[in-house]
Length: 396
Ligand SMILES: [Zn+2]
Image (cartoon, rainbow, N blue to C red):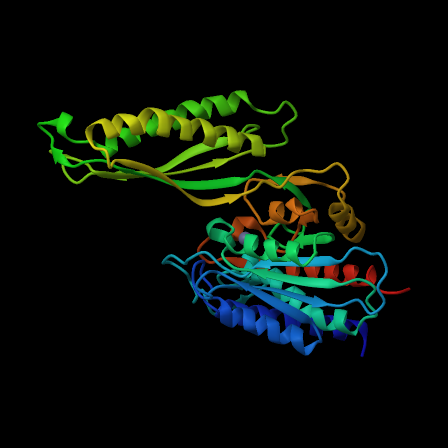
């Protein structure tokens, strides 16, 4: 078989697998087990060993599969990592979002670029790794619920730590047009619930207005936002350079003349350094527990303020000499380094000592949108990267 034929076959197979992956409606929060089983079966047939980790209800699954080195030496293992969930679809798609549709040079479908395209490439390439004389382990890491607040990955990371897998090179295939991304801010999301005492508006002193206390809380957040600006690191690589904070919504109250007993605030912060997240939360909690709550309890002892962590996705920090970035650069010839404004699972891998880079096919411009697509050529570029990895992972 000529090289061209086999690379065509490889590409066609990646499109076929991507088509299959898109047909699994793995919207964040929903059962993704059929997709995970599909991936697991492909890899198991090739001789991979694998383990799964689950959410509490055992409905959502992470898969970690390994093609073992045939001759191991001290080369660091490679982890190819992607999330299996996709964001929900809104009305207005030109095609069925869960049926992959190829038009000209593009493949349309929910998750085409974010990020089933990458997963499809890794699965399509897996048979070549399996056949190769590998001198390092190649791991496949497929997680659930990244889009909500990276809920799946921490469960996997904990297991990796327990199994002693805490060294290696991790490539997170989020859509970057195959550019090397080596940093992003963290993304922390919270909902804070206020419960006071309902009453008639003509007697405000007899009730505890959850809405009013929530407003004071929001004011404090805005005040702290200014503090975050002042804490901006001098050599920040981000735009804006400081940690940001945003109020996503305030919900409470039922009528003009009723004191609201319930209110909640959705808010988020994107810390440039971990310390900002710690600072913000400790100042805020102090204000809530030492100022607001005692005030509320004076009128109604059962009043409460409860802050729920929706997710605290740690930032991905730039490192001076990153094994992962240098490895990908050596394969693609691209020595540029960029930062992005979206969050990924990269910081979680980095946290346990795995050198990590974000680099994958497709553009973030098309992610999360109506008529999401991936340019087919991007899949070819990704397959080339995987080929490069193979060449650097075989006994000479
Ligand atoms: Zn993504």
